Length: 217
Image 1 (cartoon, rainbow, N blue to C red):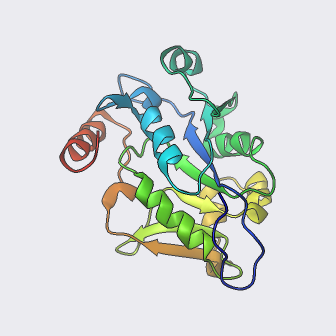
Image 2 (tube, rainbow, N blue to C red; image 1 turned 30 degrees about the vertical axis):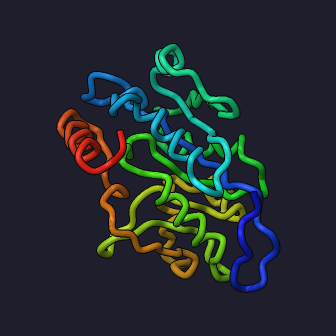
Image 3 (cartoon, helix red, strand yellow; image 1 turned 90 degrees about the vertical axis):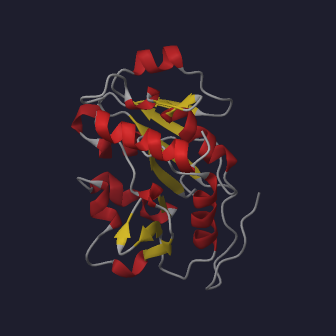
């Protein structure tokens, strides 16, 4: 699938954007790995992979695992085309997972940073990010959803910026680089899904309630 032409006279886009699903972190106080957190008839990881596969403009996901990789792979069968990466350095922070995922992304492809613990994200939101990226102005290399003055997730990044992640200590150092504010394209949305992550039993239960009340299970 070819994306539409952008403003500013850029050439044709890559066929599809590669989602990097970041699922390597520890469970913390949760009774299960985040990737296996139950939501409706599936898990957080299954929801994330399906969300990407159903969104216009996105190719098969790269899933980065780390903590409890063997248990996750014992309970989850990756869909056809999904690439699974083991990050042996996951304890050193999320940036190591991002780099591990990028090694499996073609160098000319844009990529989506998608934390697995955002279970309320949905294909329509990803499609809006894809559309904004396809029509971005010259110099705009990072697309983020935003609401009420706050930036959320997931984050879409142009291929020319991937080298910066090799030097950064955290992804936000690249995304919110203070001397390059003009390259950040904010897509205004009206959905708190872009902020709703879970890292404790209480925030997990809140996501479950929100999902059952407002989103497809």
